[in-house]
Image (cartoon, rainbow over all chains, first blue to last red; front, side):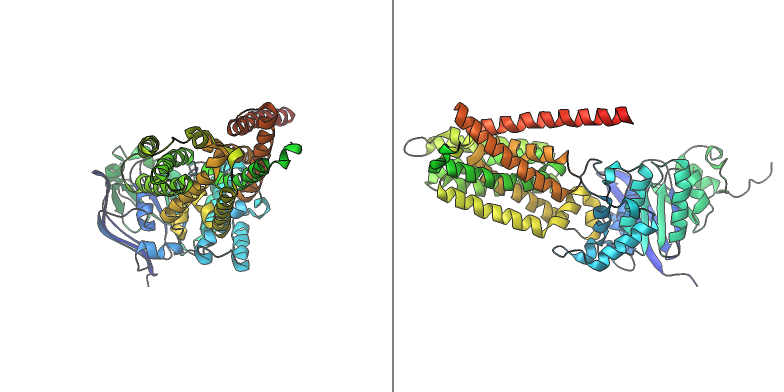
Length: 254
Length: 274
């Protein structure tokens, strides 16, 4: 039996003042999915995440998150934005950043409860950052900042975790650690991660989609050569070779 | 300085300086970290239109300034978030329009023409008891709002997008923040004047930022630094017989340069040791 659906997009189009970012995207994400979305820069990956979060309204099409409008369900989404979307000199500690994830429970005028603080501790424990909670966030290494933002997304106990280019700023050994962290989380929530780096993504995720305005996705880890060619507009071999786990089916003939 | 405090106008000036440092310390921190310095300058200058209309209608000019600065804060905030007009264009237009309206209405006002200089550059030595009471009320409003919404303003300033996702009402809060800037402008007009307001909004917070790792500590430090500037500026202007508003700003600007210099020396030393 298939697990419950957390996200459903039907024929979603987005344009920015006449410039098409998404074209007729259909997508269904289920509770136990660990989906990697790859595609070239400017292919609409961030736009797709923001549509799911309800931050961008599609010009056409329907979006459901947990069976409801994104604005109403997004408190159950953990969001890890692209690296350095914030001012590195901002005077704020890791602890205050993580607590921000509890805002939905505390509300506009409320204070963070003891339970919120407990959850923030647990989230920091999960990403192994508890000992650095009093440090200013901008003074940490990129990998540590990334883990702090994941902790901030986890405190709300989301049913869906969205990560935008999470590995763009961290080096290779850190990436392995990072994917292992995600692998340990995937039993607790659906995970969607977006990247332009096809080789890194393909090892760990369970399913892969390819996005360049149009979405190529077969609810599996396989993409056809035609999909990749259509999305990347370049010969596929350049991308597919050297990938530890095959993304493409075996070449026929030869 | 001590004997000067026997004069009531000197004591009032001292109180006004202290009240101003509370407002500019708290709100200035948001102005600096949320990067709304230019929009704050626009709000301050647009308020001059209110001063002019106040004179023309025979009302208290400071009340006119309050109405105008609040309206321009809401207007600029709305335009910058909800229309396609570039934010800096909107600010520039309101900035100049407010000043022009002020000049026209003051020249049309019946009777003798008031001292424009005191509103443009402040006149802390002529602060009266009703002025102080108004400043106290505005300070109380600012402190109450910042205490109640500290968590929400922190999310808004640090990461507006994530804030929106977790349920922070970003646009209303942003407009409220600009209204706090408008109230602070009104508090500061008597102390340093419209043209110099922006200095007291930014300098104490900018110095405090270099020595603090949390927004709350930055605010406390900015209030203390602001108080030190107004006190020492007031004393210097009394001793040297200089314009008080400008002296306060020069003390603040000089200290800011010294703090940058100090930070650089400390950084070089730690790098040399490492």
